Image (cartoon, rainbow, N blue to C red):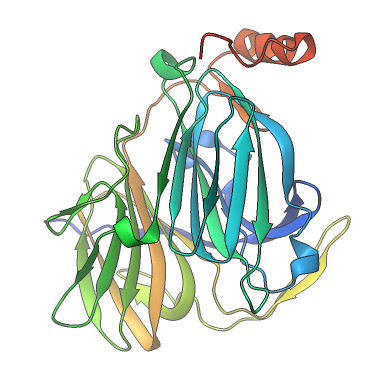
Length: 303
């Protein structure tokens, strides 16, 4: 067994997407090879309906898979192929955009106004860029939970972990996507595919990983300035941890415990031509997608 060292730590940065939804971006629109096969991770947790109610009106996707994981609140979705549904607390949607769809996602808070969740983008290999679009909507009750003797619990969204298999299947990147909760002051070792890219995203509590030089997720005050944003982040979470090579990670939870996403997947190692929600392999393919949008041939009738 070889432990994965921490390669880097960073805080998610506030940004706006859609029709004015305030969220935090852990990574995305940078160097694609850093997280291959994953392209972007957005944390859309918010307790102010005014900051998210405008949602994500109609927009295109091609060449990727989007994974939406809802903790609290609801997300209503529909697309140009006639698909529609409602994601509630604990539920997951894995959307394979493939050759292209137009869709919208409209969030609604719970009784307290909370809209909490994450969206992860996974790249598709060149052989599947133009595959037929596909949805997998998974209810929270269908996501298995493994609880160990020390109180560590893991929701297995996709992949296999500790003898349980997640309900999402047929995913090109064959990833493992876990929601891990470690009790206060507990130390736990978790297996990771040695050949996969891996990262953790802490969203509650604090703790450390092996070889971390300082606690991860401790309360900090950091000011971000942008064209439209000037935000003091006092949340004490939203820390992205990238891991080096190895087949295990060790986490030591702090006095409040720690909850984090643990995501891994084998790199595609393919060229990336990327423009917003469209990700292809070549500039020519990207230009064709833009032309399809202009010609209204983006959504393929055969699908």
